[in-house]
Amino acid sequence: MTSESISGDLGLTKWPSETSTSQEIIKSMQSFGMSDYSVFTAMLIACGIIGIYFGFIKKFSGEDEYLVGGRNMKTFPISLSLIASFISGISLLGIPTEIYVHGTSFLFIGFALIFIGFVSSSIYLPVFYELKLTSTYEYLEKRFDKRIRLLGSIFFSIGIMIWLPIVIYVPALAYNQVTGVNIHIITPFVCIVCIFYTCVGGLKAVVWTDFIQSFIMFGSMLLIVIKGTVDVGGLSVVIQRNQESGRLEFPTMDWSPLARHSILAITVGGFVHYLQISAINQNMIQRYLSLPNLQSARRALWCFIVGLLTLICICGYSGLVIYAWYYECDPLTTKLARTRDQLLPLLVMNVLGEFPGLPGLFVAGVFSAALSSLSTGLNSMAAVVLEDFVKPFIKIPFTPKGADIFMKLTVVVLGTICVALVFVVEQAGTHVLQLSLSLDSITTGPSIGIFTMGMLLPWINGKGALVGGLAGLSFMGWFVFSVQAAIAEGKITFDTKPVTTEGCTYSFPQVENLLSSASPVTIIDDSSGEEPWALYRLSYLWHTLVGAIVTIGVGLIVTLITSQDVKKLDPMLIAPFMRKYLMSNKDVSEEFYQIKLAKSDGEKMASCANKEADKLLLETTLE
Image 1: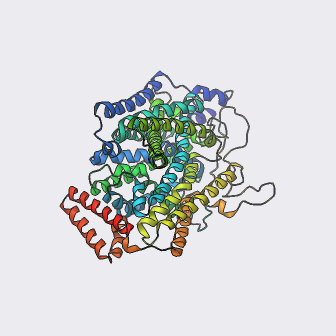
Image 2: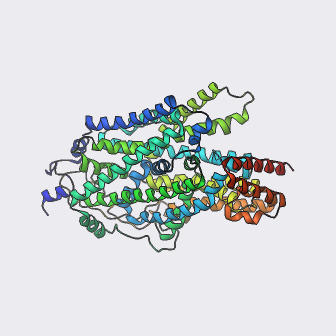
Image 3: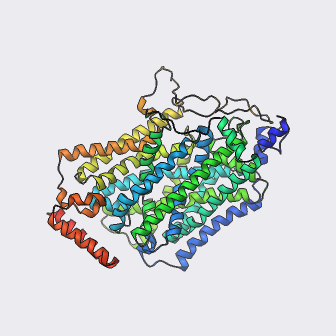
């Protein structure tokens, strides 16, 4: 193969000379023009206009309108909003990187997502919806007590503060690749811009900005993979090159929990992790509760699952396209991409760089995917701080103006902390997808454990849930940070697919090939010659399940030591298929029958019945 043909395969026809350096190519590719900046700015302005419309033109009529859209939103916009919130920029950049570095095994997570649809629609969603909750943590207070609600709020707060710096870091990576602007310059800008439209416009603004952003995400990703496939020579070339490199593969049948992507790790471990995100996460449940009835919520859930699977497949295929482009000249080794998660932005500049405005559209898509998640997270966190951490401990209540000022100051402080934590994320020794899943498990494991105990294990009491939740959080905090430290120090490495630089037509610093040494899921001995503990080498997909098992196990032990009167438990707090086992108490049984009868007579009667159920629960608790 000639030098010129190789250059064409790599998308580097602008630099056919071997005298070109990687740094010169990087500068040449950072050609973000006025049209790109205009597209990017237009996206931000559009989000702001939507916030202004719902905040100042179509004003809210109350708290219910602000938080859950008056519970009369439409199914299709909610479905797209769910997709936009779930995906964010982490998946848009992380999934292609995962496929390029480790192969296609991760894509089989789709089977776990399908199973999640069935479990969510039959167990978790009916309970939240029938109780007419606004916050998922209200359930914990009804099922257990106020202490567990506070514990759930703490889990949420910790999870948000771990997750948000990654959400900020991801779009900054893409922006840095195509413009050269330092990520620590762009991240404060992201925090300033993202707060506005969610604070002002409420849930309706979030949903409709997500609606627009989801089309941009789908459109930009489709544009990249279609144009990239055509330029590289067609679908057959993409498949052939990835097959020859071993990237087209199924998950291993290894039964060892140390295998990074075994069939068990993906279907069982991945199922538990994503179940927490999609079934009990406040950001997701809040959107389901904005729909008029449970049937609409279930339709939105399945539309969300289908759309999510489609976008994951597109992102996964884009990883195959990346390798097909750079199969003879790895951009990580040559430093065209300084981090793994800049691979997709690099492909965008190669594929779409000659078309004014299209790179700007892609960056706008990545940023917009993060904007809603970030702003919603900051404002939700501010509300949790005010309602759960401040109001219960002050003697003089806030005035409406005082509460508003406090929440805004909280958002500013939390946003500043998140920007500072970007430095920590930047130093992590793994790419953002795995890092996000692993760090999330610190709180997702104990959280799914507590909610599962509440809905599926009616004999567990508040003491068991409290001690179990604290034990799960403590254990997972120690465990996950120990694992991340071992990865950052190079004590643990993972199997990677081979790459080469033999076909490069430009010069670059001669450094060790980052991916060509395809080691097994192996351990690099430290100076003492000892291997890290086997528990540290557990696949990251098992982390959430480990946290849930610790939480539930400790909760069961504590409950056995204490006691729980199951007869006093409201059946509406338990998963529907479990309720028949709690009908031995005559009064509760009769009340449960009245609730079901009222539901059949209409929404208004159902609301009254729910209030009566709450009254009964309070009376039995006092007894």
